Length: 430
Image (cartoon, rainbow, N blue to C red):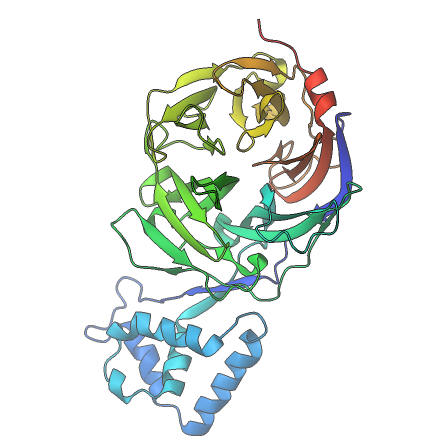
């Protein structure tokens, strides 16, 4: 990279096509080839029911050999999939557990959720600090994975930021756990359970509800302290589905179960919302870019409803003339709120910069970087979308910023930034 403010680390995360989840598969007849009274699902199930005991056992063994290593509790997974399609199958009572598992397998498909890209990370402290050595920081990284059909999911990694500044990312589990939709409180508030996850790297937020059917994009995580002093994690993300693009929020304590719901108001149909990690003056605060050009500031008594925002930062420098946006939730430092930003400039280059906001009144901009702190360089500008560096959040420790960032909408790199040097590079507003 060509930015002197950033020290690039020798850590790179690339897509891994070997990481998969099981998703529903339901073949149907093309128009003009339907068999009245006997849909395709029924015909497939009837063929399975007609297998002899030896053939049934052989086919189930084949399924286990293929899937057991990458999917925990496979029999329960296949039986659950059978239950989802059982309404289309006559004579369900005659099916043994072996029949049901094999029918479930025929109506399932393996999906490689990060085979094409792994990028746009955000980073938060790990809830379990006990594993960190003296002076080290354990973290959880969220990433946007893209697979077949340009479908986006959220995946996670864990790692350590050592006391000496080095970063290691743990090898992810071979097993991935897709979410199960829990009881809906209403059409828009729901829970996703990846309860089989034993490690955050096993959790995959794969689209399973209509409002997310075309993808879950760019999770911006932030740790939040509740009034009772306990901690949780809240994130905003873009859901693309049957209602178009909308901003949604999630909350989790353990990265295995999640509560999700859309936001309402002026940010509902926008991208790029980011929450402040705590209330200021008894109100919730957020950054938005609903006009796709400027950064906006919102405050609200309700963390799910955002109205009457004010324009906070407009493009000023050539590298941000096309549009601006945030690169994650504001980070609290001694001098105020450090807001990581992105700018789009010539030839649709995405570069990263930063602004400083007043701690007690975030509508006051105290400084901003006149040149990018990070921009695409000649050795790493190529990928799925060339000329892009982008992040969904950093982590502060002392006077250093740890910055994971996506490169060319393809893979992920890491860097560190001296906060003192970053603030010194800022210009004061007019």
